Figure (spheres, rainbow, N blue to C red):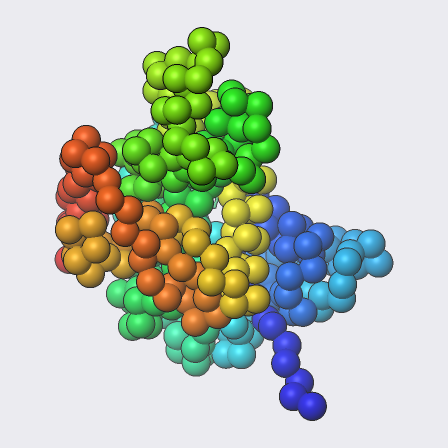
Length: 315
Ligand code: NAD
């Protein structure tokens, strides 16, 4: 019988990385989990701590703190290393700092013969995903950013609360930059196949203007959380586990990840958050939603801002 073992290597065991490792172990997603960080003590301590939870986990996971040679037989390398947002700092402010960090990490990973899929979460995630693709030389399908996976989750949570319906019955996406220029696709948002606009028209307690407020709370959620506790990590950690599962279990799930556009949505040569089908081989295809005029303009603007910001660093 074939000895088939899934291995995830995590680079960056800070707040996001260690929360991801914890969530991964709790959901029993992978047989092997390797932790790497510049701060070796931290990753070694995390490996010890997580291993002590094994008797309570749903399945066996072999966890150790390792080095880049462990990437050779990895199925997925998840990148959560880098500086995070300081209060008042935008994700785009991080671009130069984190691009340099990514370059050195990706070069080490590739030098060790990695042939799997990169999952990128470090910010600014769309630009860093592009950077990882460029520095690694991997096919575009095998470099996936967390994109607007978290923003979409935040939107579904808030809509679920507003309409008092289970979030799993809500189909609504945030697309574009994971950041200030992202946008909700209201024209195709529905709950149980009924358009969000119909839900609003059906009852006086719902108002169209409330949708704007819901979106603002989604867009600015990171700022609100950072102001209160310095960083955000649980939501993204669970989003990354969702993405890891979709890949390892060959789910063909549609997730709003940061992926390479090659003409889709009218743009080329950019990684940005759009719905895409995720499989064991990476991104199989992009789902192209027919945006209305206003959404198209907002999406174009998001692309423009990303291109302008990454231009000086990556061209
Ligand atoms: P953190 O400071 O807690 O952790 C970062 C870790 O990276 C540290 O442990 C640090 O030692 C390590 N690191 C730095 N340089 C390294 C290198 N060259 N090699 C190996 N490890 C290195 O930060 P955090 O809160 O965990 O955030 C991590 C990243 O995730 C940030 O860029 C943050 O903006 C991003 N983030 C993304 C999302 C999303 O939705 N995509 C959400 C939250 C945070």
